[in-house]
Amino acid sequence: MKIRLSIILSILFAAILVSCNDKTNEFGRIDQLDDGLAAPSPVTVTDVRSISGGCIIKVRIPDDKNIKGVVATYIRNGEEVNSKISRYVDTLRVEGFADTEEHTVEVCSFNVNEDKSEPVIVQFKPNIPAIRTVKPTIFASAGGVKIRIEGNTDKSDLAVCLLRDADMSDVDKSVSDTKWVEVTTLFTASDSIVLTRRGIEPVQAIFGVYVRDRWGNVSDTTKAVLTPLQEIQIPKKGFKYYDPGDDNCFSITSEASIYPVTGLWDGSGTSTTYCFLAIGKCPIPCWLTIDLGVTVELSRIATLPRIGYNIWSDAHPRDFEFWGSMNPSGQKGSGEHGFDDTWFCLGKFRQFKPSGYNEDGSVGTITVEDRDYFNHGNDFELNNEEYPHAFDHLRYLRIVFVDTFSTFEMPDATEAAGVQFGEITPWGQVINK
Image (cartoon, rainbow, N blue to C red; front, side):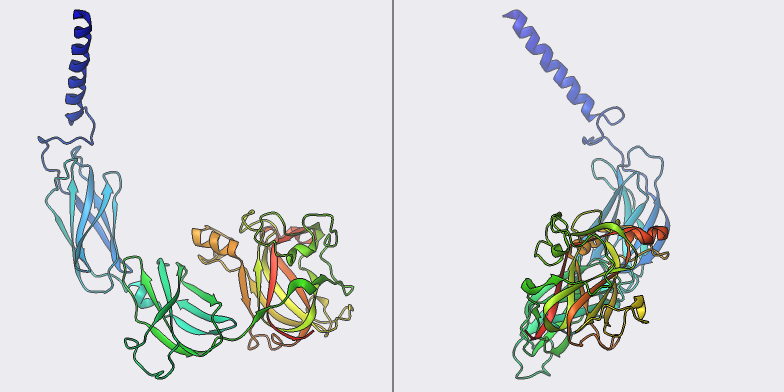
């Protein structure tokens, strides 16, 4: 019994020693409180640089082992806000202002007890925030509306809020008197992008749009009276591969493969596996032709990649062209790509990258928005101002793969390229069956 009691007392004594050591500042754990700590030394502010809606403050931290970190304290939208960094970082970001007025920031070091040093006072004027530099415009589109965002020069994270009011009794009513119903909220950090909201009935209504930053600041609301254009998805049940005699995209007719040309319209575009893959030595550019089975007038062409597979690289198409014909001859001609005059160009497009390509055209950094955008595919809107025949009637749709990400990086590979593609979905109107 005495031995057992002695063991218990030894364990308790050891625990007390460990607890005491935990509270020491010089040799113990830094995250424990110590009532005997002195207030830390103040930092030195070495630089202040204004940014959109805020500023960046550079500091030099003194050689004081009592310092755990640095905090900037300021008033934003009537509330006190703190921005903290550890002692191993020298840059504070002060953000979220909706104006360009002068603001005051107190910069202090702090210790493990959250005791602060004497403050260093910093005054700055933010650059114009994104909610004021961005000028959204809204216009009717096939199946809905489109919102063009320009002027987000700092590539700030923005929410783009689309509104609608079906009451057309007074189209001149003020924004504040309009009975808005929120249609959707879209998100972007791109400096220039066109966002689309489909599935809106083709009925005239008042539409509005504003942008909101992640601190809740909002822009003015832009208003427009619009009528979305009517469109349908062209039924794919009549699609089939058709070679007039001049298609040059090899390895596309084998139905035994899980990557046949019919994978372009079989509805499996959301799959990571079932897609179209031309594995032969395709020249670049190369093309293939689809018989839509009906005469159509197209408004846009939606595409999906081979989702999630080597995105922004490999054999994914980088540059596209779409051509149409009512009755292709299959003969060589004197037009672009050697096409004859039975073909007309619907549009030329590049895979859009929200964060932008490098100046030399290389992909560069891939952001989360880039990844999501790539995997959700493209919506190529046809435009008869730039391409006069974009809305001409057609039955045969030709896809031209002008460049892939591989052939852009390796121009010598253009005579032996592969092409992979997920799904193609034309939208518009069926003229006759």
